[in-house]
Image (cartoon, rainbow over all chains, first blue to last red):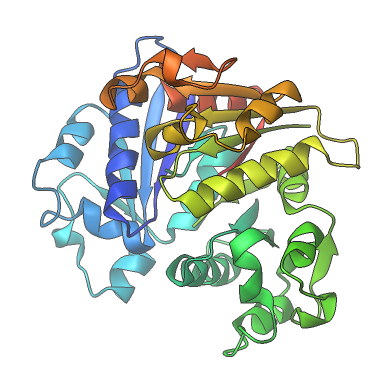
Length: 112
Length: 112
Length: 112
């Protein structure tokens, strides 16, 4: 099974819940989760910048095979550069299109 | 591809993110998004009333082909009339049933 | 049709919206909703404890056939016991895996 987690909220508690859920999906012992993706956009995008990822949680999740995709529209609106993102994060033109594409491919959607 | 955006939050930032995402889906240059629907219910419904749509964003999205559906159960609970909605918005008996129906038909779901 | 409602928010208004939506799905007069499940995790889990369910809303929804599943990872993180949950609620090892499984089986997802 495959899951996309939408990191869209500016709320820090919701952002932390999102990362906890991603961690739990990665470590799931049922062995039924094959792929986990995170799409970061709107208020959620700061959490995947180097400035906010102090505990290296995003970096560690990337190392564990989670795909992170950041919305270029959001970067532009917030005056952020790709170089502000944690290394290894891809950008996509529009996060909502990517979330749609992943669901259409069969990913389940979770918005913490 | 098709996407339903759930306008369910009373939070104004989340409501604005929802409308921004709808706009970005409509203007998406990949040409892969065929239909965009918005289901407004609970705390999200005020945003699709004439009183709240000061910038005419909802009106403009309707003109660009986005389908807006407002939950009749919510209108009743909040003492709102259909005539309070921006013109061109359909009502559905229950927003959550409509969201379910759309996903069952193949729409991806986004809750900003 | 089948719907899973994700009770994941710590916000009491969002929790109440979630329960209202579940109630409306159960009472839907279109007769198109066959199954409703609720997965409670993270900040949403308190709402399904006996301490928080003062109005017995969760208890009544269980009696009406709604399946409630509580995340064991969350119980552990919050120092809660299964006996703190409203009677009749099952536990699952990880809520996000359960939400993924249900969507993969065809359930629509709603996050109020």
